Amino acid sequence: MSPRPHFLVLTFPFQGHITPALRLARRLLAAAPDALVTFSTTEDAHARMFPAKSSTAGLPDGAAERDFDGRLEFLPFSDGTGGGYVRSSDPGAFNSYMASFHAAGARSVGELVDALAARGRPVSRVVYTLLLPWAADIARERGVPSALYWIQPVAVFAIYHHYFHGRAGVVDEHRGDPSFVVELPGLAPLAVGDLPTFITMSTDPSDPLHSALTTLRNLFDTLDREIPQATILVNTCQELELGALAAVGAHDVLPVGPVLPSGDEAGLFKQDDAKYMEWLDGKPANSVAYVSFGSLATMAREQLDELLLGLEESGRPYLCVVRKDIKAELAEANAEIDDRLKNGMVVEWCDQVQVLSHAAVGCFVTHCGWNSVLESLASGVPMVGVPRLSDQSMNALLLEREWRVGVRAEVDRGGVLRATEVRRRIEEVMGEGKAAKEVRHMAGEWKRVIADAMGKGGSSDRNLMVYMEGARNGI
Image (cartoon, rainbow, N blue to C red; front, side, top):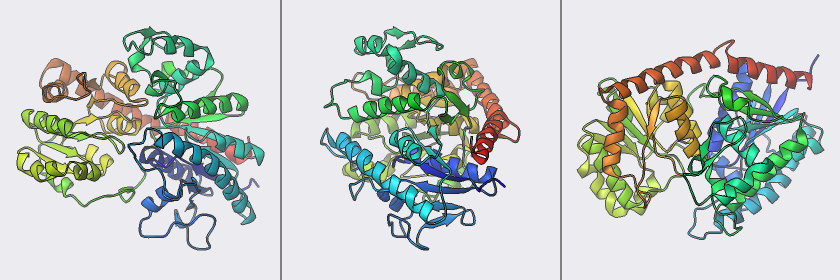
C-alpha cells in the first residue's frame, strides 16, 4: 500500500502569494481524500491569517490551526525579523528583509520538516512559490521531491528563463528604451516596457528591489540543477498559453489552474464589513465598474482624486477599493470622499471573487496582478489594465492582445492615471460600440474555456491528477 501523501506548501508572506498557494493546498486535498497538507508562511503573515489566535513557531500540541477534518494544518516558519516586512521610506528595507528571510527562513523550514518527521507526519512532497529557491535545497537534502508553484503566467516564466539563459545582455543594453523590441525564442516579439520590471530595472545592488532579481536568478539556477526531476506547477491552463508552454526549455511544466477558491476564503486578511454586496444587488446587470489595485499598491492623493473624478464622469455606478492604510495616510481625503460620491461606493476591503461573480459587475479596473486577472477571466468580466510592477505589464499585454478581454490604460509621465483616461477606457469595454461588444463576447468565451479546463476531466484537472499520481507513487 502506498504511503499517505503529505505536501508541505511553502509561500512568501505577501497576500498575492498566500492566496494562490492556499487555494492549491485545498485543491490537493480535494483531489486526494487521503492526502495531508501542511501550509506554512512566516509567523507575521500566519498571525494576520489567524488574528484571534496566537502564532507560535514549531509544532505546538493542539495549537495549530487546522481544517479539512485535520488534514490541512497551518504552521508558521521564522523569517528572522519577529515582525515581518514593514513598508519603509528606507530604500534598502526590502533588500534587508529578503536577506533575513532567506537565511532564517531556510533554517526554520528545515527544522519544521525534521519536526514533522519526528512527530510521525513525514513530508513526502514540498511545494513552494517563486521567492523561496532554498526550499528545493531543503527538500533535496532530506530526500524529498519538490515542485515549484509558479503563480504568474507561463509567458513570464519563459521570459525569465531566456533572460537567465543568454538573453540578459540585449535586455540590459536597452532597458532605458521601453519601446525597443526584444525577440525571445518561442515568444512573440516583446517591447522592453512589457517585460517584468525586475529585469528592466537597474542592476545596481542598491536598487530597492534588487533582491527580487537575485532571488529569481537563484530560483532558475536551482531549477537547472533539478532537471529532469523538477516539476513546475503553473497557475494557468494550457488553453490560455499554448504558445508560451512551448517556450520553457527543458522544464517539466504542468498547468493546473486557474486555481480558484473552493469555498469561503473571505476570512483571510478581512478588514471590514462593508455592505457592498447589498449595494451591488440593487444595480442592473453589467452596469458596475469594479476598481481595485491590489494589496501592495500605494496611491497618492493626486491619483485618488483623478481616479474618483474619472469614475464619476463615466456616469456608471462603481465599487472602488481604497486600502485602509492609504486612506489613513490621506487623512484629509478621508472626510471628503463620501461627499464626492454620487454614483459609487468606496470600501477598504471586499471579497474580490464574490464581487467579480456578481451579475451587476461589468468591468474590472485592475493593476493586473495575476490572481486578479485569473479571477476576472474565470468570471467573464472584461478588464481595464493599469499595470505597475513585476509581471503586471505582461499580464496587461496578454489580456489585451492575446485574449482580447480588455484594454490597457496609459498613465502620464508622472505615473498618474488621469480622469479622462479612466472614463475613456471604461467606455471602451462597457459601451455599446463594436469593440466593446467584442471584448464582452471574448470574456464570455474565456470564462467557458476556463470552466472546462478546471472541470472534471479538463486539461488542468488531468494535469493535477498526473502530479498527484506521481506524488503517490514516489516519482
